[in-house]
View 1 (cartoon, rainbow, N blue to C red):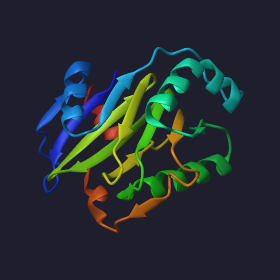
View 2: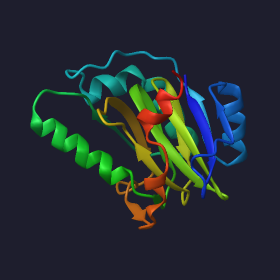
View 3: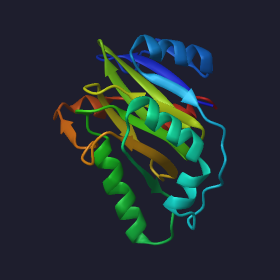
View 4: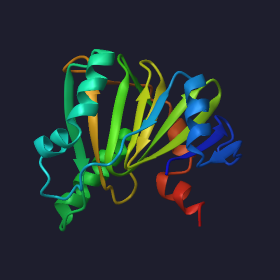
Length: 192
């Protein structure tokens, strides 16, 4: 189940809210213009699962969302553990890139078909850490400052939606704010 932790932008150690209540999370995020939803899981993702197989498993939901929001491009971003130093290097590089605060010219829409990742939304003086898990759909509005943590050992498959081919292009702020906030593994450790 999704986790939301809210912290002041200048005091990441102060937790203003921490909840796994899906309805409360959806309501709070909606007030910020962020869409949060949940799709029924229809596929088991393995290293052998192709992009086409995953997209076919969610075809009805994908088509409905594309029609509703005018989304033209759909693909899959996935990073699943594999043996060897090449994977570890690739995972570390991907993680460090997304841990920098940035924004996009269009909405960032993601459905987590497998695994976990955390979007940190920097809005109105607060940071909203939204830990997404399999089944979660999140749509971050264009222009929203944010960063993403896939964890120290990434394992996720996310269906991505765009209006344009270059929809993901990030505008990085070069603000070091992300470095002061708890990472995905620390957020999840707080549940234990």
